Length: 197
Image 1 (cartoon, rainbow, N blue to C red):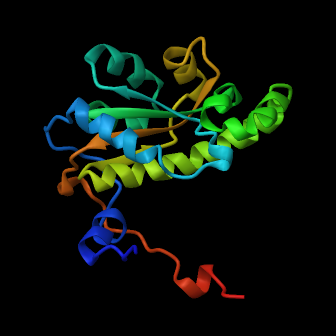
Image 2: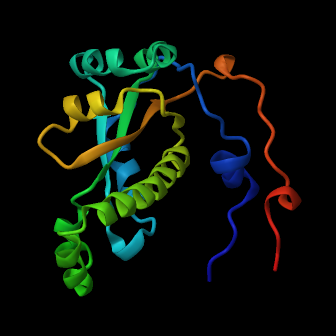
């Protein structure tokens, strides 16, 4: 029988977690990045299509390729982050369906001729997986700074050339410096956002 997470775990994942813009000078181990993906991959996607693809940018060479493609306001914090994850979606996810969803192989074959449907499915399910990715990172003690301010076409050409992967989000990862936090913004209350019907 499953039990609710305790208050400390919920705080780490949700109520006390923040979007970070400043970073402590502390490296993130490659094993932690592997563990991060290995947690995030278990979140549900439609027909288990799992379109999320990740490029973890750590080297000086890769960072030099990425920084000019970031919006000006995002360059400094991206340059300072110990790791930058480029989170993309594989539009050709259907080619993996015989492995990921063998019971749906016929659907994968039909999707081969439906690029518009694959665009929509990969966007929706890639977005879901980005949410799982952020929660997985937080569960491992990492802080996140997800951003949409970058030249997506240029990032695709630079980091996903020769693939059907398209970038959705760039996410700085590491151990955040609380000194760089802004005051926390409000969230909508239950009654403003929800209804039980």
